[in-house]
Image (cartoon, rainbow, N blue to C red; front, side, top):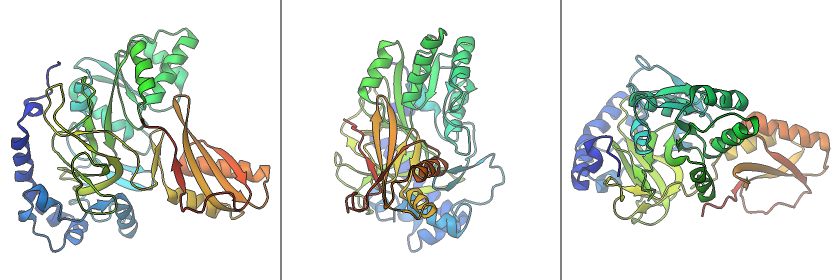
Length: 411
């Protein structure tokens, strides 16, 4: 197997646990002292007592919906910024909206380790097809790649023909972006007669890497690994060449809890992914991601010893990621308010070939084509994603409270 990013990846699990929980009390004390949001959220808990997973599980989970509400009450960061913005190079707006500050350092989202595990090395040229617009998406692996010693072509989303031309000219050996956009680039290169054969490895995120798509890339000579990252926390876990689960990144404490509760579930049981990271600029302690996963028993065949996760297994709530962007039930409610002619609505997410596709079904007394077009435009404006619109008679949709239905097969 390949060499490690550093010696910590082979550290004894008990030693790693001792190190993390040895650092945690001081980190929680820093958060409480510097961030009024944490002082309020953890009122009544003694930071010095949180020296084990059992003690950590007593702290309340801060869920993304809670953070959004706190940020609306006290914009922009809800009181969870530890100190001021002095020294913070960038601030971001993610869908929701959720506001995030960039942490300090060359690799603030801890992406270099994941890139190294995927085969990226110093001197590589990397095409980054994550968005650099508003959200930290593009910057997460951009900073990781540069910290690793790579050169980055900041391609962002879209302008496919120009990206294909850049691939032919710069000959990047690596790609980072969503799983399905790499196929778009490779196919367009073939169609246009461009040489895109330089890409030999990829690290993807922001969507499911389906086995059929991974195999297609392998058949085309591209080794693809995936990582699990969020705008709030950075790169939480990543695949190695062993492809036997997502290895938790160093400096993160990961728990799996029963959705809607603070209670950890037994290893192997599916639950909500809850993460504590040691970001002193923007501390997040028992942050509930809303994503479902489970712990995989044992350690990876690659030799890395940290906890492994089964990867992304859906949402604990109805907030759903489509083409790397979250779509929230709140956004569907906003669309309904913009078009009072429609009543109940449901957004269905499916797969169309190797891409995500959305269909919004909306109950309406009059099945008007002009209204259909207007609703489609609103869906695009609010979610920043295209979707088909189906106007259906009143009473057609199930009375089950579901606003977003993710019908993609993750098997």
